[in-house]
Each structure stands twice: as C-alpha cells, then as structure tokens.
Figure 1 (cartoon, rainbow, N blue to C red):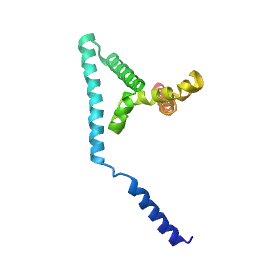
Figure 2 (figure 1 turned 135 degrees about the vertical axis):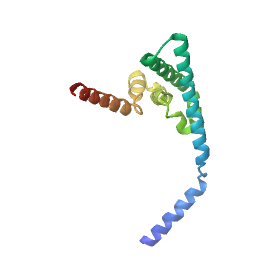
Figure 3 (figure 1 turned 135 degrees about the horizontal axis):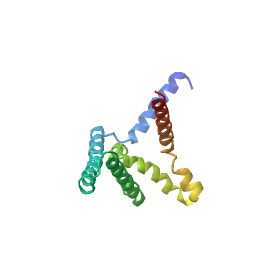
Figure 4 (figure 1 turned 45 degrees about the vertical axis):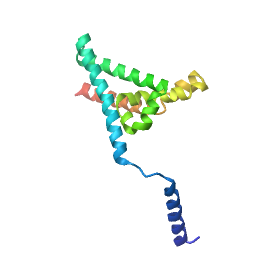
Length: 150
C-alpha cells in the first residue's frame, strides 16, 4: 500500500469509527460536573457548620472532622454502589472533591476482594491512589525538612 492510499484508508476508517460515536455534549457534562461537585462541597460546608455549632470545634479539629466524615461517606457510598452511579452521571464533579479520592481507594479494594485479603484487597487498594499518597508523603516530608533547616 502506498503512502497516499494508506492515508486515504486511515481517513476512511476514522470517519467510519466516528459515525458510531455519539457527539460529546460538553456544556451538559460541565453543568452536571459543576452541580454535583458543588453539591458535595455544600454537604462539606453544612457538616462544617454542624460541627462548629454543635460540638464547638474549630481550626484543625474542625477540618479534620469534616474530612473524616466526607471520606467515610465516599467510601460508604462506594461500597453500596451508589457512588459509581453518581460518577457515571456527574463525571469529574464526583472525582474532584475528597469523596472522589475515597472512591478511588475503595473501588479497587471492593473489586478485587475475591482474590483474597492480601493479594486482592490489600494489594489492589492503592493501585489508583497509591502514587498520589506516595508523592504526597514525599513532598510533605521534603517541605518539612526544608522548613526544619531554614
């Protein structure tokens, strides 16, 4: 096949494949992501007001309590299969907040639990989130050491 024929063949093939692909609705996807991500953040803000008013928390304790509850909710909804349906409809809106990180840790653990506790759940739990945790810890340690010596 010559270069001209190959180029023509590739264009025809790409046109054929694209004929089966539905058009992407960018505005609709962004709108859904904005609504769901904003709603998750509103839940976090609501929890912040509750913990601040009812329990008198402030500062780091308040931030930590809200983070723990949001991580728990994200993991619980993942275990119940609800978070996957939210993510299917919301796209990036469900991935960006802290609940998305909890989902990225819990999903592989649930998916591979049939392979056993060690080789399945424990080994696969950090496939997606592992590099984030490793680089976060290393960057925090490096910044801490720089701060210590300066």
